[in-house]
Image 1 (spheres, rainbow, N blue to C red):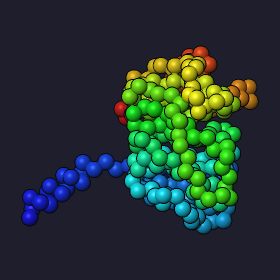
Image 2: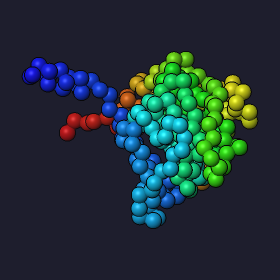
Image 3: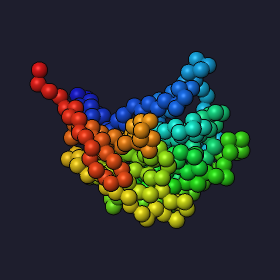
Image 4: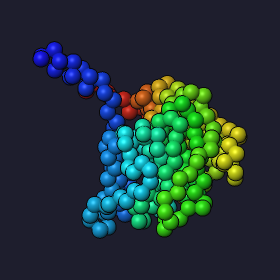
Length: 251
């Protein structure tokens, strides 16, 4: 009996636990939290939990959620993960308005600034794009198909981000690379023009974001990495502008 309990404990230790994810509405109207396969949304204006009607098939996520994201205009929300399903929600009615099947598990998601396209990356390093121009929040759930946009050649993509002006999509991976790709006018035909690579991290890149100023509204790219640095980049040239060491220091 004791041996069986020990084996069960060892098995539980080997089970991968997805980290908790938090996303905040751009206007701070709501906050979304994903823990495992459970997605919850709290309405900050109404001070109440939000119900999530999901008539897609299958309803709700069946495995760990790995990525959640609000759109820049606050109208869309996307969730995706290990169940190979990308769910697109109206962030106004909180209905699931579309579901997209992925060939592989999903590691990252992004929404174009105009809300017309959703991109997601799978575990094999392929970024896919979904056209949302024929979808509105009042119709029944629409099953959409994704088209391949770009690839990182079998390296797991850890983060996706659109530039503030919407001209570029930035992808980072576990092989230390950050790729800046021109987002085409016809993305369903693929993105074939690389603007730059931002190279310098010595461990996996874990996250991306942009910092905009009045003098530079197109923004500077900020990246975090397992090498315990945060780096600032010019995405047009791929130049490293600054590095901040954030590793633990001896006291």
